[in-house]
Length: 151
Image (cartoon, rainbow, N blue to C red):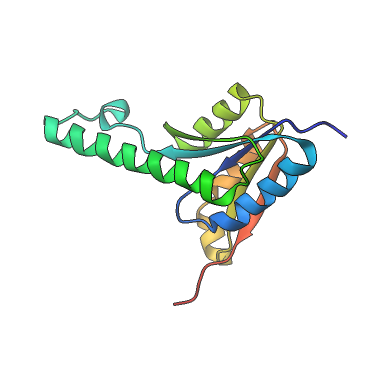
């Protein structure tokens, strides 16, 4: 069996993060692996072809990114045992391509993602990020089912 040294957990703040971190922590503790908790933020508007706009919009976006990064760091601290090496990374870009590029850069041996349970028609019309990662990535993928809460 291949040795697992780096585990990348791609998170969306809407996922059941405790479940994802629990799986990552369990595997990391067995292999002595490092956990990289990665969240992909939307790219800056000028990156996708829009004008950057006034300075207050840029400042607002910078504050949003700082807050997301702070939340990511707290997430790593709250859900991962102190005995396991971990680091939170906030990266901007297109989700699938950015996760794959970062996994390759970090030499990830395992990618853990949450996958939402949707209806047949939803799945028919829209592919999930986890399915796209499976198709385009060359790294073993562990997809954890995320069950939506009924309101």
